[in-house]
Image 1 (cartoon, rainbow, N blue to C red):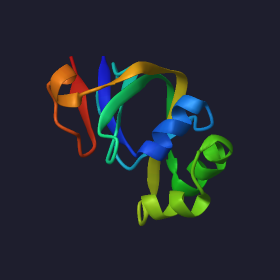
Image 2: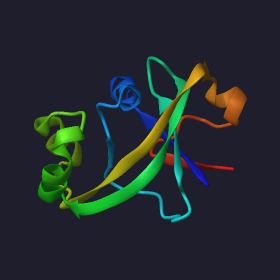
Image 3: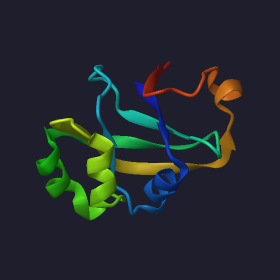
Image 4: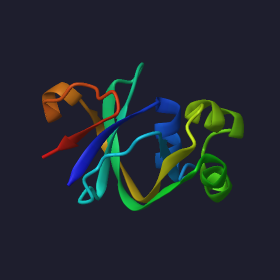
Length: 123
């Protein structure tokens, strides 16, 4: 099963360059069968640009989450803690293998979907 995530373009680029190996989330999809994340690069790109396989998911207190992922977080420590705010714990999706599509795809035309606030399951 696949899930569609909105990711800021600068972070999406780092995923496909291989310098960002974790995607952080305050909440996570509940379905354990999700194995692939389809990447929607949010504004100003507004296109589906690739996908990645999930290696594993970490769910830890934010300080431990940072310590375990900071080398390949692809974001600054300040950005990380600002993102999680008052949350005591968070999720890090570890990227196994990423594939950038040769051509960016329209979310509406190709997937019949709207940009997700958090995530959306794909058939």
